[in-house]
Image (cartoon, rainbow, N blue to C red; front, side, top):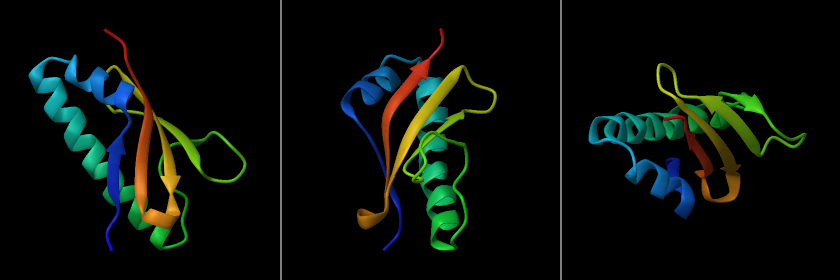
Length: 90
C-alpha cells in the first residue's frame, strides 16, 4: 500500500483561495510530500521538515520558493500524510 495525502477542510479551503497556478504547484508539492515522507518512513528514516512533537507525528515545513508553510501529521496506521494546517502568506 502506498502513502497518500489528505488536506483537512480549512487547509483545503486555503488552497482553493490561491491563484490557479499556485494551487497547481501546491497540489503537486503535497503529492510529492506523501511520496517523500512515506518513503522515508518506510525505510525507518525521519520524514522531511521540522518535528513539532516528541513522538514523530507532527512536522512543519516551508514550501520551497512559495509563501506557504505546512504542518502535517504522519498517520502510520493508514499510511497517510494529513495536512491540518496550511498557511499562505499573501
